[in-house]
Image (cartoon, rainbow, N blue to C red; front, side, top):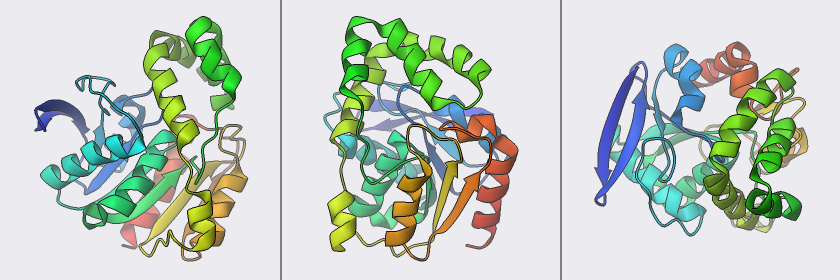
Length: 247
């Protein structure tokens, strides 16, 4: 796997590259490009470290749209146009890219995400006051497999500051009424992937997308939680490859 560093508006953006494929993966809150290693190996494409994450530089990020700007610029530089795969926070970023930079989007894959991403106020408070406990709680909700949850809670604890930022941005993200009113219309190929046991962005969030993007395909992966690409990588990759092959 290759590590690439790009300069976007004088900011260093780090990207992991797998097999050659016009796919860009966007990680969720407090994560980084390594979340997608199994997908990069099997399916191919590129996975970005968002600003303030992984090996990318620090930047002032005020809203989801700021992340969307950097990802769109990165896609344009690397591929011109790509299948945008976004998980959780990354799914919110993917929606913003489609709305604001449609020319770089070939298709959308929305993974364990929603049109609105409210966060429990207690978690935001805990991340500031008791980061280790908050990280443990977030991990518990994020995984169906509690052994994986224990491992990942250490990662979240180390990144409590950026996790707080990301979850705060998620909490303010809301396109629900725009979908309902028809202001947001997704007219490109779209795949919805969600874990059957996702406790953070439950199946009903993806069902909302299916209702308002009638052409979308939806895959519910059994025995998987929010971190579906880690818990059930083979099933996830199969769904993604089937979708890409039809484009």
